[in-house]
Amino acid sequence: MSWLTICLTFIAVNLDFFFILICLMRKYTLQSVIVGYLVGILILVSASFVAGKMLATFLPEWLLGTLGILPIWLAFHDDDEEAPSDKHHLHGWLEVMLTYLSVCTGCNLSIFLPVLTTVSLFQFIQVLLLLTILTVLLVCLLKIVGDLPAVDRMMKQYGDRITKVIYVGVGLYVFFDSGLISHLMTLL
Image (cartoon, rainbow, N blue to C red; front, side, top):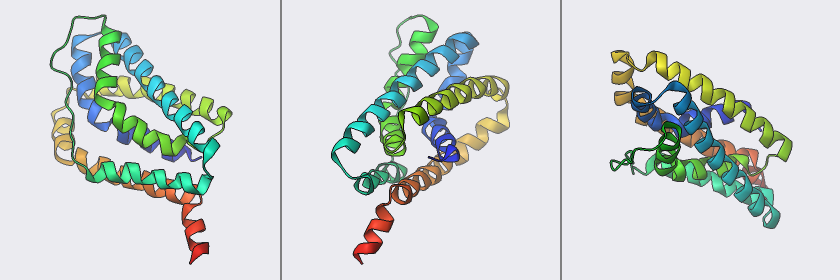
């Protein structure tokens, strides 16, 4: 398991949601945004881990490396999702969590599942702690930089490209880390 890969995966998967987070921070308290975003992340990452473990029970590790195609496919599949426009007045953290789950479920499951397939339960707990820290730091940082016009322009211009490059990198990492490439090389 690569901590850098976990961090880059977290950033890439959530890059599009950063804009929505900035908007949600204008509507709700910082604490509500942190709690709702964190609960959503923990739900999706846990679902990815459980699904990965179930697959790992029945399939050899090198074959699970084929899951690396999911983030690569997402990098080239343009299906931009928007935050739901029909919002109900809920408690702030609940609306943040539901917004996150409705916008990011597919990407999170597709990207984190192949990354977490080979980690142990202890490593998964470490990943959850890392993601908790990253989530709190990220939301606080977005609160600070959210009003900067230069950040908004840069993300609009390059955000999609940066996300795609990171998704391809994560997919390639899964190919190599799982032993898929080594296994295929022995067949040649």
